[in-house]
Structures are given as structure tokens and as C-alpha cells.
Image (tube, rainbow, N blue to C red; front, side):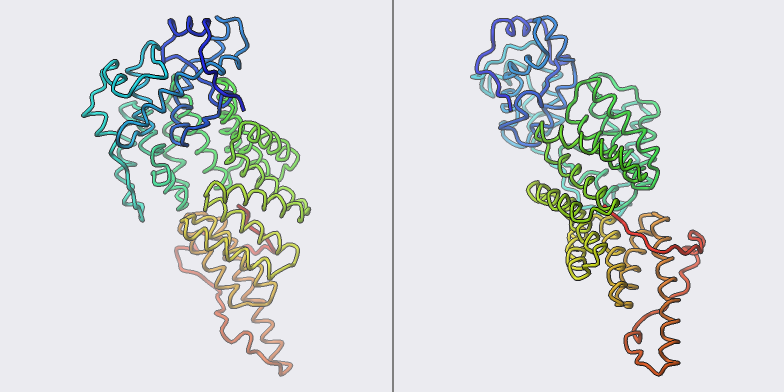
Length: 472
């Protein structure tokens, strides 16, 4: 990892006389990767970075573009100063202050917060009010986020696309933002509708490329989870092209990992391995543990599908370790469920059930409905293999209810098929046992279902498949 130079050399000081922050391109990841910055501060610095290609500076200095990164101490210190202001500085506030107030670079490391405020005429009442305000959402229903969605559409009509983006995707409070709520609760059709409207007319300026890439990535994720894998690949490819255009190494890694997942879903394992491995390599090189964990999980799923089960379990455990260090309960839930399902494929059912139950609990507590539903579905498969039919049907019903709530019709259909298939098999077993005078106590509490409510039946067909599993 590179460190920032202690002093700026003379050539760089010359550059400081002609660049301004509205254009300056900061390559944070090739520099010190935010060492000493909080994740919020690092994201803010990364967002500011997308305003000018560092190659323009490198060309003027006749040096390599990466060398420019060695001299970027000033923006790093400025971010530290901004976030040291009393109260809570938000990412959007810090970025706006820099882009709108900080024109020519004359700030030194000894500049105080008071001096910064005086030199660049920050309105203290305005800034501290914004800094101290926090968003504390506690949404439980779609009705509670509807006002934000309505405001999003109004902003789109006014062609204020950046503000529309931040209405849904709040980088200052991501864990409680509208996008996170919709994604975790499985409202993927709404996510697709929102983001497709956003990209229809938005032609992003240089300073909006990060937001546009994020929009495409969220749209790709929603399509991938809905089974529209080809569409997802198209969005991820667009992400990769824009990230390469602006030399955003972070999003290059993320796009590669996402492409690996989408190709896995298409059972194109060669492409999935290539993209996932390349994404893993870059993620580790730049120290992005989040994308590293996703890439490891991808590799686990790929090896599981090609029946390299022990290798798959190893990759899942590597992914789980990283996610646990990142304090990512949703990601950890997905890894636990995948480990459990792989043990099921190895016919190690007790281990499978243990991991699946832990994964379901983690998904439930972290409000990830899709992971929870997948966990219940795979738990039902394990219980079925142990002839625990009543518990298996109950697990299928839990999965069915969650899938139906998320309007994931194909997955709900899988549950319906499995329940109908199991009920028929149990009836036949009971009949055979009774004819032979055998004990039928194992079946006395089984609720044999042949149909669902009318609304559900209208949505689901009557096909019956054999066996399937759901991965994260």
C-alpha cells in the first residue's frame, strides 16, 4: 500500500495553481486506500475523485498517472478537517462544501477548522445544522417509504437526477436507506422500475459517474435476483465500461464479481470462474474486503455446482470469515446457508441442518427476506431427506410465504411443486403402510396440502419438477 508523500514537490505545487476541485481526479485506491479514514470519509473522498482524470495532471508533469497519487496529501487532510467539525459531517455535505467552496488549492496541513471556515465562507449555521442532522429510519412497511419514492419521481420530472438518486440511495445512512429496505424485503420489481426510470434520461456529467455506476449495479442486482440474468449482464458490462473509462478500480473489481455471479446463474461456469477470479485478484490488490467476500462466495457456488463440494465449503468459509470481520450479518447469513446446502448435497444432513438454521436466524434478524426464504427452502430439502415430513412441509410453507410476499413467482412455484409432490408421496406411503399393518405415527401430524388460495393458484402453474436448491 502506498503512502502519501510528506511534502508536495515543486512540480505538484505548480499544478495546484491551475487545477480546481471541480475537475481534480483523485485516485484514492492507488494512493493510500483511505488509510486513516473512516468508511464514510473514504467514500466521500472516492466520490470527489471522479471529477477529473488524473492522466491530465500526469501529462502536464510528464510522469506516470499512478505517480500523481503519491502527492495527494491535501485532499486527504481536507476530508479529515471537514469530518472533525463539531457534529456529524455527512458525505454529501462534505462533497458539496469542497466542490462549491474550495476552488484553488492553498490549504496546508496546519490549517485549522476555523481558518478553513473563514477562508471559504462556510455558513456556520447552515453547515452545522446539516452536519448534526441524522436519518433514523425504522421502516417496516412499503407505505412508510412511499413518500420517498414519490419524491424520487418528482425529482426525475424536474430532471434533478443526482438528487433523485440520493433520495433512494443514501450513502450517509446506507443501512437504513430506501434502496436497502426495498432490496432486503424483496421489492425487486419496484427497484427495477425506479432505476430504469432514472437511467432512461440521465446523461451523467463527470462528477456523477459514481452515482450512475451505482444505479446500474443496483439495477443489475435486482434483475439477476429476479432471474433476468442476461439483462443483468448488460447492466454489469455497462458498469465495467464506465469504471474503466474513469479508472475507478473499486468499481472495476465490483463489476467483475457481479458478472461472475450472473454468468454462474446462467450455468456458464467458465465465464463465471474467469470473472470471479479476476475480481477477487483486484479486490485483494486494492484491499476491498467486501468485493473479496462476494468473489469468494461466487467461487463457492461455482464449485458446488460442478460437484467439487469440499472446495466449495472451503470458499464459503473464507467468505464467511471476511464477512464476519466486516460485520456484515446479511452476507454472513448467505454464507451459512450456502455451507449448509453444500453439506446437504454431501448427504451430511445434521451438519446441513445446523448451518441452515443458523443462516435462517441470521437472515431473519438482519431482515434479508430472500436469504431467509432460500434458507427455509434448503432446510426443507434436508428435512425431507431425513423423512421429517411434517417439518419439511412447514419449512416449505415458510419459504413459500416469503417468496410470495416478494413476488418471486418462480421460487414460490418451486415451493408449491415440492409441497404437492411430497404430499402425494406421503399419501402413497401411508396407504402402503396401512395395507401392510405398519405404524403410521410418523405421519399423523402431517398437513397434506393439494391446493393454495385462489390468488396464488392463478399465479402458479401445475408443473412438478424433481429436486432443486436455492443459493445465495
